[in-house]
Image 1 (cartoon, helix red, strand yellow):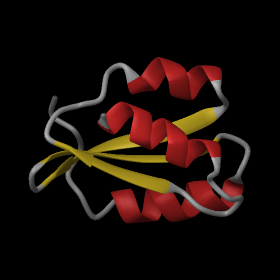
Image 2 (spheres, rainbow, N blue to C red):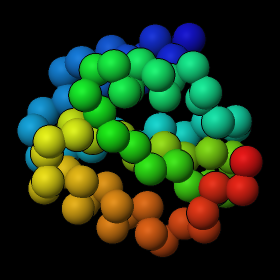
Image 3 (cartoon, rainbow, N blue to C red):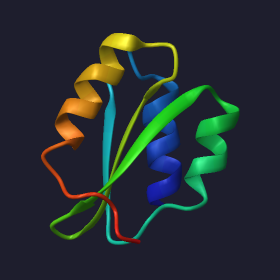
Length: 78
């Protein structure tokens, strides 16, 4: 399942990196998990649906990189 794969990837996400999740719809069940486990995210409108950029909340380097990558996509219209 996509949600479980995302969580598994986030559990081993190295410092300085972010995870880019592409999905046909917004992963609403993922957001509470992110909040509870110390992650931040940016959701954008992708070509095939939703794109979510996720990083460790206290990782400034990953936050800058994720937010820069997200800026090339339109804001989520969900």
